[in-house]
Amino acid sequence: VDISPQTVQSLLQDMQLVVNGKSGTARGAFANFGDNKNDVGGKTGTAEVIKGKNAVDTALFVGVTPVSNPKYIVVVVIERGGSGGRIAAPTGRRILQFIVNGADGVTPVRPGDDLD
Image (cartoon, rainbow, N blue to C red; front, side, top):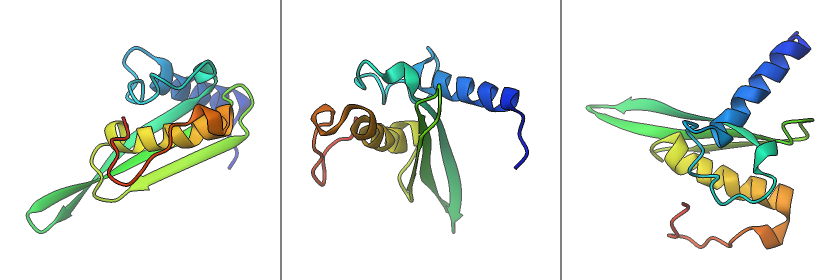
């Protein structure tokens, strides 16, 4: 894909605001990320899938770090999960915490644990 460096920088800055901005949809999920939070970006999403008469939302999150020179991308898709900011972003945060801060920076998760 032919994308100008200026467009890439603009997208990365926007993704950084999703995690760090006052109205960022992943801000709450990344509140306890740690000192390196400013070098993380993300994009949340919710795909509404209609099954018969019911809507079952698929939660989406794409994260990137470091924003200043991207090296890692994390993609989280949780079918029937709900909203991307509330469900997928906390999962992505834990993965990115492990990448950026190491195992000591991540709280272990067990089945049934709340991811917020």
